[in-house]
Length: 246
Image (cartoon, rainbow, N blue to C red; front, side):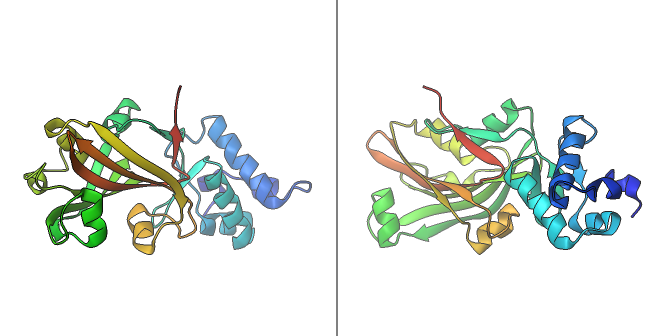
């Protein structure tokens, strides 16, 4: 590939002084900060950097990995690396519709439905939904995308007594949050937040590496005196942050 396609200078990357990977990071940052590479612009791949700059794969990988960890670029497995928008934020307190958050940022929301089915409650799930063991529950799994970048995995169980029509909803047009709050206004919320490493199947649907730190929110909501839903929300740490204002 010609050097013009990457926009990076092999000579500049090999100047003495700072380590090569640091010079690569600086040059990439400069092109982003000057606007030459706008948000969502595709960054040269490791293979392209190796070929055009003559650096090692380890050096190219380190430069891109550290830029991703710093929130400068977004790495999507199978697609490549892209200039990252300002890190998205989710409120620590309150229960907001992710589609509304994305639209407010001027981006496009898209839902990828992975699973929607009826399941029998195990002991653990029955306790979470405050139902009897063996009772029916509804289970949905979906990925929310912002401008085609997966930013949240939603793994949700719903109390059928509160939302008997849940599985009949078109989640390409409405989110579970929007539907459930419209029929069962939230009276109480219980929420736990922790840092985790993703499971292999979660890495696949979020297009992230197994080593990507993630933010996990476990949440239950009640309407009147009944549990409505128990949900796990998983966010790639390089693409999201939690924010709270007091």
